[in-house]
Image 1 (cartoon, one colour):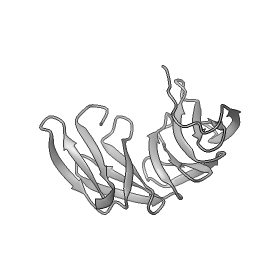
Image 2 (image 1 turned 180 degrees about the vertical axis):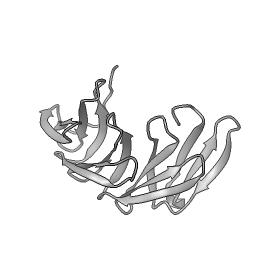
Image 3 (image 1 turned 90 degrees about the vertical axis):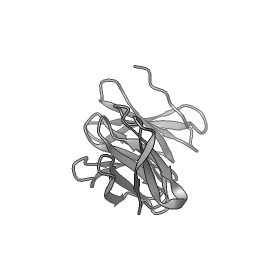
Image 4 (image 1 turned 90 degrees about the horizontal axis):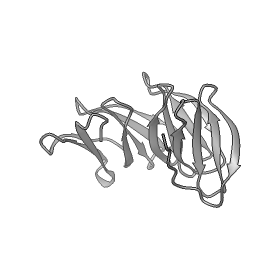
Length: 170
């Protein structure tokens, strides 16, 4: 759901499309096609820009929910999964089955940095001050801690086998 509650977005993986529903009417207002097997949809920050990971081809697609238009699809690597709007104004994305996360410029949706992590980055959460990102390494036994400003992995912390979900308390 968008931060303002105006839209709900749904990934239709087998139909290669993202559906946008207006919550005031509970009606579908847009069907955006040509999205290669979308798996997870997220509204980026307080915008009406939707990002979806496309695991079929290792890309992320970006959609304008107001216009119901595909903005761009960008290859980032295998296992493209979930996009997050970072505290630095960039888009941070994870890749199941890979050993990196990617950071994309929000204005251009171009990859500006690949940050190595241990294995299968699955969740990314940011500290309340926006200085640190925490990434689960599913299939390993750790989380990776990243300096957001430098876009560099600081260290890994052993937490037990297959860390998957995380919760952030603010």
